[in-house]
Length: 67
Image (cartoon, rainbow, N blue to C red):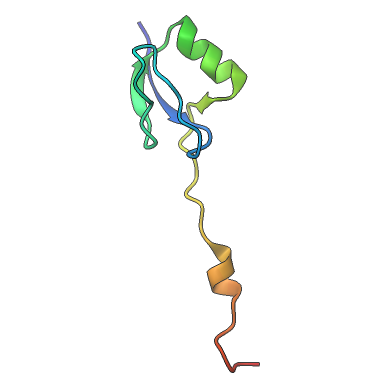
């Protein structure tokens, strides 16, 4: 069978594996079967590693007292 590393699309939402456990937020290899094909089609998981979200508000906030 085909083994692929899958990642949850949204780290806030837990994705169940067929055995009842949750898919790791960092992604994990799974054997692609009908269950995982459905999760990919519905958009719960992706084969692409999600980009690390950076907090841009920290960079845009000016230091206290600066103009």
